[in-house]
Image (tube, rainbow, N blue to C red; front, side, top):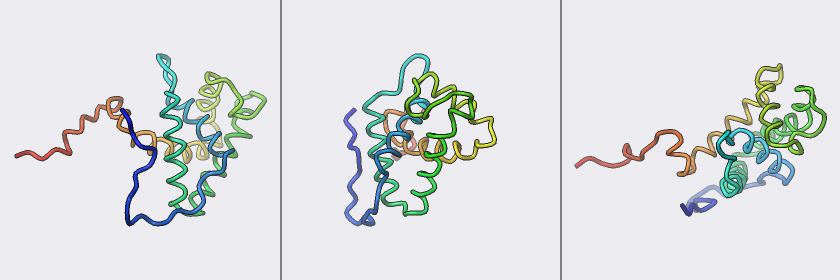
Length: 146
């Protein structure tokens, strides 16, 4: 399925600053750990799409929203692994270890930091038509009955 990275809207608000490369890297590392399953890792093309769409989202969301996400990603990058008893930056850990760290982070005092980032990542991830089958969405509610 060929889905564009961004939808062009003629009267869209002009975007501001998107995510910096470091925050994009951390967001992709979190998303890969969130959306991979035992059967298959998260597809690389979907992770790239997510990074582009997330960047566009925050370019239009404004500086406060972007700042909160950047702060959450920074806490996850630098504090999540040590909170889980692992040394190193979150994004440098192997996939299985990142998933374990996120699971442990959910039960820690810093859980709200993760939930904030997770919420935005889920909203963007499940916008993609390839996610529809995973959620049971069949697109029938959008069709008019005659």
